[in-house]
Image 1: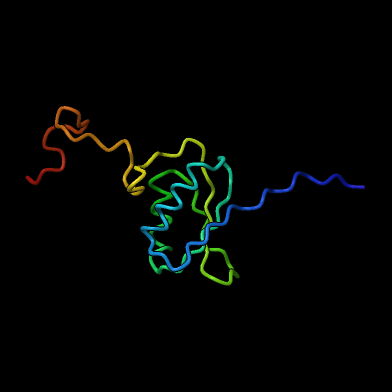
Image 2 (image 1 turned 90 degrees about the vertical axis):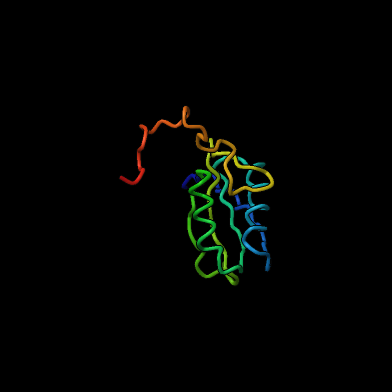
Length: 117
């Protein structure tokens, strides 16, 4: 007799249909914001930009991009919701809520850093 470990919960599936990637990221951001860390999300997305935009959004926010789902009947991609992920604007989830410093006195770079000689 063997003891079975706890079953992994079913992934959260978001069917993006034929929506453009910007709309998909809006929906994804809303749904992920209400999802427990560690949850795997499968996003069905036919937009050709999805394989580029989803990893970029995960990099921006700190969620873990797991890649395309092999053998899926429609293009689908997986990510894992990360604890402490970076928050983004609700109306524009490709913009973080904590932007970099905008004023010279707040900029940690030394004066003229990166300026042409």
